[in-house]
Image (cartoon, rainbow, N blue to C red; front, top):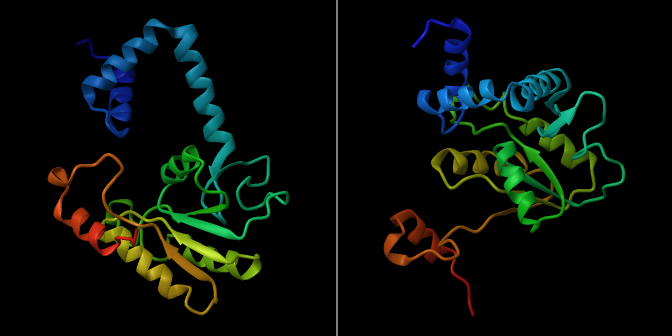
Length: 200
C-alpha cells in the first residue's frame, strides 16, 4: 500500500467507530474516494456542520443545535409529566423509534462505573436531573439503564439521589425478550424473568 498519511490517518479514525476495524475502514474510504462528489464532499461538509453546530445539551444530555433551544427539555410546547433516564443518546433513539413512550428524556452520558469513558458521579448529569424534577411538574422518573452491573449501580445511585424529591421512581422490567427461547437464555435473564413474572 502506498504511503499516504492522509489515508492512514483516516483509516485510524474510522477504525475507532463502533463495529469497524481497519479492513472495513479501508473499504469505506475507497468507496468515498471513488464517489468524491456524491459521497466524499457532502460527507466532509456535513461533518464540518455537525462539528460546528451540534452539541450535547448541558441540561438533559441529548443532542441540540447551537442555534436553537433544546427540543427535549426547553420546548415550551411540550408538557410531559415523565422523564425517562437512559445511559446514552443511542438508547434514547431506540426508545423513540419504538413509539412506546411519550415524555421527556434525560441522557446521562454513560454509567457511574464506566471507567473507559472516564465517567464518575460528577461527569454524569445526575444533579441536572434532580434540578429538572424540582423545577418541572414531573410525577414519574423511569430508569431505563442497562441490565449490566454498571447500569444497575447507576440506577440505584439515582434512586438514592431522588429519595427526597417525592417523585415516583420506576424501572423497566427485565426478562425474556419477545421471541426469545428458554434454552438459549443465560442465567441472569432467566433469574430476572422469574423475579419479574406477572399474574395472568
